[in-house]
Length: 175
Image (cartoon, rainbow, N blue to C red; front, top):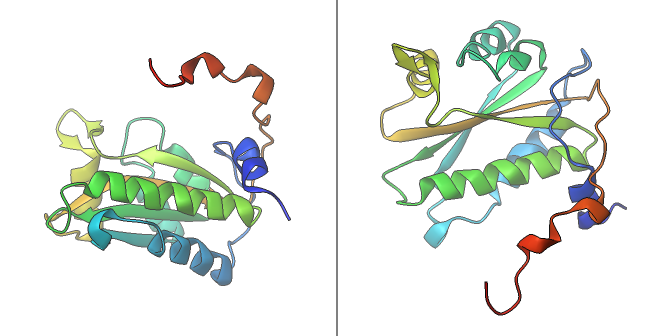
């Protein structure tokens, strides 16, 4: 069994995937992990849109002018949204859920990559959030944080070298 620390050392952003479908039981484990993530005052504002349809993944890949194109070749995308009326820290709650889903994917032998949506633009006339809201019919009360692309890795990324970590960023007792 892999330790949590080893999981963190080996998890890297994966942007190339094998043309292999992610099994439904693995999708369920990933989304259940998100549902078990902590949230402020147990408000659980997050919701997840699981996308496997190839045509929708291609459309989703067009939400930004760059950094989202890998979704077109990804077997799975999960759009992470949150109800802004349930929590004033919906973004933090949704971020925690997203990283927990990424770690669960890694533990299952899958790769993933976070694609930022909130605060990003599709082009000069529409934001990435507006584009996705329209594509999926998401009500205005939901903020759209990110998309997770997930699949079986078709690239190898170097693990973190703990000897090269910026340990000068760790402070004891004072800054």
